[in-house]
Length: 331
Image (cartoon, rainbow, N blue to C red; front, side, top):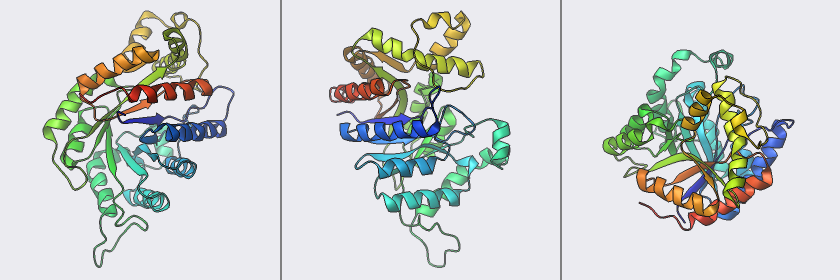
């Protein structure tokens, strides 16, 4: 099976609550665990009524407690929002509770707007310290030295695997410099994907964690029994991205019959550009599209988001995708 993983944005649906979203995420994580997916990640977002994973480490603990084998992690923690020591303590605790099942992906963006960032009590300049903060965080997971004045407890000696996240060349270059695996956010910002992967592989320096580059693009995939059903389900994601470009971030909406009635030609072009790494259709259609994408990017693994409104359709999509994964091959 080609390595496949899940990115879950823990979407809150219209007329539903964050509690409902978290319950459905646990069901999906358990489903993915049984289907053989490698990892299941949730992401840090704040002040967004349509996303229920703001307390990311808490959600990870909830999902890890309810699953058995799948790796659970952050895709990612927005490190400028936090003290590296606190993140080391949180993920050291998670690793202590669920050994060899925790991933820590790190991002440089705040994951929210400027006003909310102020509410988080963070300095807007903290993003400038991101490379140093990543290295400080790495240090807390290394073997504790004699007379070390500050240590993460738990955290020291645990070697929680770090990932670098990115949607630009900055993350690619930093991942290469530090010898970390790299996840690119092509599910919403695909424009720089090819250049970022090229830079990452060209500049990569081996580290104690990783001896050669390991790239995992994030993409959107919706699989259904027919192409028409998949396109219908996809309209929920299209509406979400339309809301993003209109600066109206709300809850996940149900699918609609004719998305063309919702947007202007310019808006359509913007949404389609942002979703150019979305692969939609029946199993045969999606298999061909994914194999072409793997061949082009030489991806080592794919992490997949499926913004489907109906829970049963989402579970079915990931089941069909798992079968597709058995037929995909590395480039």
